[in-house]
Image (cartoon, rainbow, N blue to C red; front, top):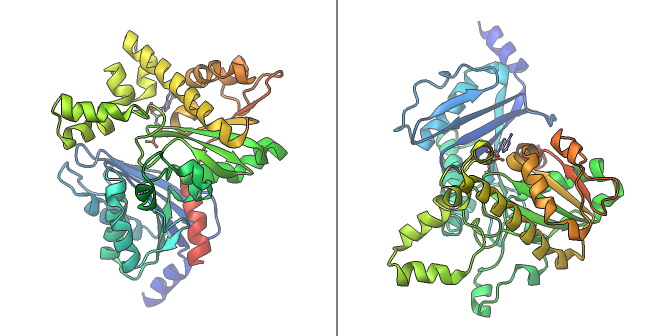
Length: 397
Ligand code: ADP
């Protein structure tokens, strides 16, 4: 018996577990040592409402009964318990997390200690919809096995290369000094795209490139030599493009009017900006682009048109920071899948010489610019989990 157990342990591969804990979902991926492709992916969606589990090679009830009352930390612990009970997935030797905000202090991935966790907790007011959930997952893993190395990888980190001027608001200097600056997000996605760009663009990868990460949250990053020079999200994840439920950039005077003129509380304004605006608010139909595309409501079409126009405007706003545009890359759920949105955005960029090839765009090719286009246009799937797994390999070995 003893020999059998030892044999099992010897044959269990060491695995790195990547976690991406959001407000209502927990996505995870398991990587074996050295590999860049996960051996399994899973997710629990609808936490707090109607939780559902799915994973490669797993039954939907593998985590046991999940109810709307099952808290986030218990979901994390059930995933860990389930993975541990299945030696075919391996022996968890480290856990890596996507953490939305590293502030000014953390621009590179770190091995989490109690002190670092405390420092990251002080950043929660900067990303109230995301940071608490990211950190709760780290705490849940510590509660499960305190000695397990955990790595935090930051969505803000990639933008640390922005020149100071590009990160400043026109606010009093004392506020800038206190950290009220443009941090930018989706950095793990941009880091992945920056890494694979040469494969798709050749030497142009080191030129002037804008990457459009268009998912439920949406932003763009202007890169030069594959480093972030400017980005559309700012101090918070509300800035920039119109998103699924978030408003994107707008006149800050509206915020004052909502409170002073209409008497909304801060909590009501926060809910309005984070949950009730964007594609959902404009269409009154859905926050999901796919649903809007299938809808016949004129408001759904108008929401898509606004999304495209605002995206092109935000892209154009960044161009002075990189001095022009050699290539545009679309990624994430909408960027990778919506030919209509790619076409809609590029229609506003023809003045730049960016011309899409309609057929290549419609059939989902990787390279979708026409022969006469002065700007290359590409679709590249992102992979934030692979970036986290790579950082874990570097930090934990
Ligand atoms: P996030 O990771 O930010 O939650 P995703 O990157 O998964 O978001 O993108 C989700 C968005 O992608 C939704 O608006 C969804 O409707 C849209 N999307 C996914 N597939 C398609 C498709 N085939 N056509 C149009 N939009 C799509």
